[in-house]
Amino acid sequence: MHQASFLDFCLSYLGPELLNIVYREIALDDSGVVLVATTDDGVVGFVAGVTGVKSLYRKLARRRFALLLCLARGLDRKPGLL
Image 1: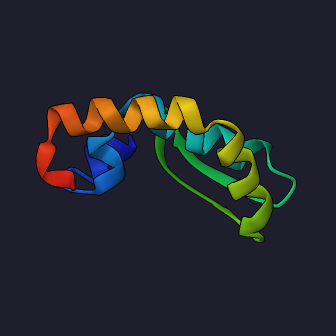
Image 2: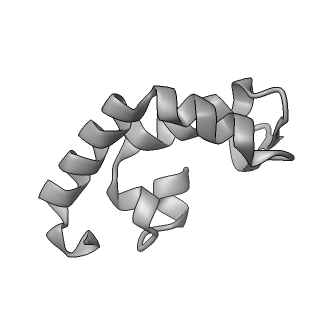
């Protein structure tokens, strides 16, 4: 949904793997908030964020190798991201 809604957004170019890591860590973070809007047809929207970024950044830092791999793949797909 993120990639379809934000076509020219930097994180979208970095691929679904990176988005999965980021949104998963937001959802699992103690300060994370995720709201999902649904209809009978399924998910129609969502919002995700944290009330405190420090713990999220720490968790993402622990996943740095996976994030760097996603970054490398994204740069391979779109070198202009740099």
